[in-house]
Image (cartoon, rainbow, N blue to C red; front, side):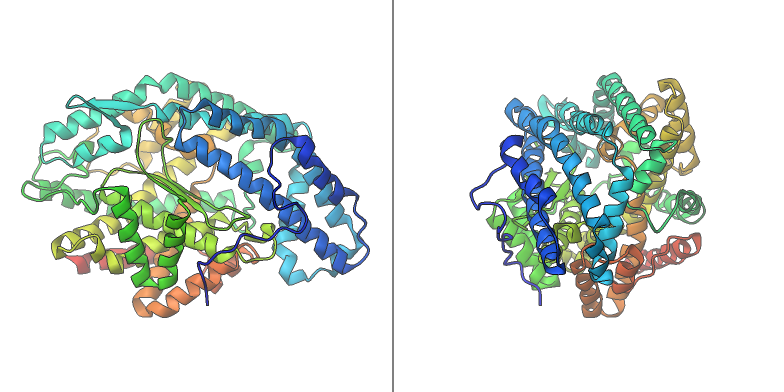
Length: 572
């Protein structure tokens, strides 16, 4: 039914050899759309297709500029190419986009469009019209450039261990050492290195907060949080739901986190569990090493995905063939991981920072789930139809983490190691929730109080951190590190308020896994069907198609946490 033999969307409106180089060469296509006469439903639909084609070409060009820059943050030419787009091209596009949106919404024939087919698309267009302000164009251009500085600053962070330089991602493997002094040394070096750029990151964040606040004020909102909820298209839940989620994590998740860390403490036989002990194993138990190099990681991931469903494996093979993968950590590379959809050519790009550890497998299958989503949504008729809500996008990735465990034997041929890997994954499913709640709650305060000082921000961060702190790990003497822990979360800098989605989607992913445990093929069918709809249905409708209920109430969280706890118990 589905194929990874993805085809580049054919061009009919722009020449096949057209490339985005500057605004004067691009403007005639926007002018054509804005001036074109639309007198029938057929001409309107053709107009929408031409606009979609133009959007895809521009979007893909912008994506490649960002991909290349994050792959090599030290290359000034790549940074300048990205900045040129942000400062010289996008600001000229924005007024045309607003005019085209109004042309569509105000046109008498808009009512003749299939209401079901275009409902979410038109809703999104109306939202964009409501938010557009001409005075925000230069602000948004500045923000696009500024937020990338987080990757530039972080990409230069290295530590020296045993006389060798490591990126911070690479250095985390020392946290798995049997020798506690080695783990502590690595932990402190990583934290000390982050502190070296504490002031630079505080200054960057201050500037981002002020510009975002002004953006919201210009658009008629009292704060950036409310503006951002609207911008993100959060039509189906409110800030009150987020606050209820925070409380539910404290009530139903933290007790499980305490159990996990107490078991870790007992297993290690230490009097006091310290942060550098979390990833360690007892003496005589080797750290999990699922692969040695990135080539092995991708080949094993392809095998794992193929066993799950051949189509999934084919998606990764296609990306490998196109060289749409940059997996290994290296100096000068931006931190983090992402899957970047490419609107015109179709096959996305996966970026990550692998260093041979267990969490790299999780990241790979997570981004692989996003990639499958990109493949499934690509055939949709309009670029706008492919812009799906992040809450379903993260179900795609997080459910794939859980589905793929069925075939993790490709990474671990030792049964005991396979069990440990699955245990590690399920522990992570639970222990990530408090951090999600912390990051989300922190952002609500930051943007409700945009004039705060650095001292007030640090105080509030510490307060929120203590709210969700387990009662097992001993953080004494590490207060300076803890006070700046928020700076390691790139979402705060680059994609504000995009974090609660991980919590909502983790619950959806657990629900998908419950289905999978009962009927694998039906669960995978539901998964593919829902993802193939892109953004053409509302979020609750997409969840329904996936066989889920859009529900992240405390009651639902309790049920799902008990299920994961039971599954962990089965592993022993």
